[in-house]
Amino acid sequence: MRAQASWLALTPEPWKNGGGVTRTVSVDAVQQPPRWRVSVADIDRAGPYSRYAGYDRVSVVLTGGGVALRAGDESVCLAPGVATAFTGDAAFDCRLTDGPVRVLNLFVLRGAARASVTCIGAPQDPKLALEGSQHTRQPDSPPAPQLATQPVLHAGNLTSDGATTQTLRIAIAIQAGRLNVAPGADDTLLAAGDYAIGLCEDDAAPTRYIATNPPRPGALAAVLLDVMVTAPAFP
Image 1 (tube, rainbow, N blue to C red):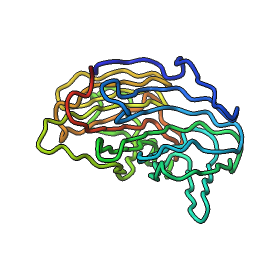
Image 2 (cartoon, one colour; image 1 turned 135 degrees about the horizontal axis):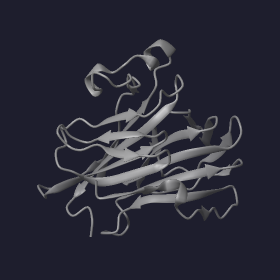
Image 3 (tube, rainbow, N blue to C red; image 1 turned 30 degrees about the horizontal axis):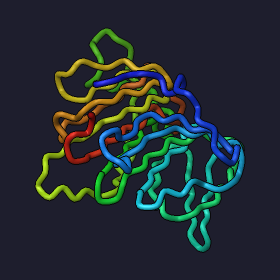
């Protein structure tokens, strides 16, 4: 991976309305307007939700209850641990359904970026959460937590006109674990609150996240994001 750090250590940027703060994990430094942006927001109260005209958005509630968004007749429910796609064009108001939340946000510029988001966590069935994942452990090691992968959520679109594309892969660790981006590649160790960013050499290569300790049933362990843009993705 190209970079690894803690998103918990990133400088928080206060919202203008005082309703929360945002930490920017990754943003396009090649083109303006940015083709993508990934951030983590702490939302403390109800209020206006930032409008991003021309962008498609994906949000995942990492901690806390849900978020209800409404703009006129349009409504969106952000449930804990579930990737949800919606347009950035609408001027939503947000209501917290059960107190403060921490939300992972992905923004992709329509026509300039295509993204996929995968949430990885423990199954709701506690028995499955404690079973060993036989293909990820050594014979004498303790069972690795069995994680469930939600269906991949896609957002945005890319008009490349035959130009070379690159895929940026971003892993957000909610719980400590090991990230493997391709067969035969070394694992990247991530602490809770870490993130790792790099270019994906093989879009078809499976990415695995193996939690250090068994997550509680239904809890998130990590969120994986792939963002495809025309090259270069980095300066």
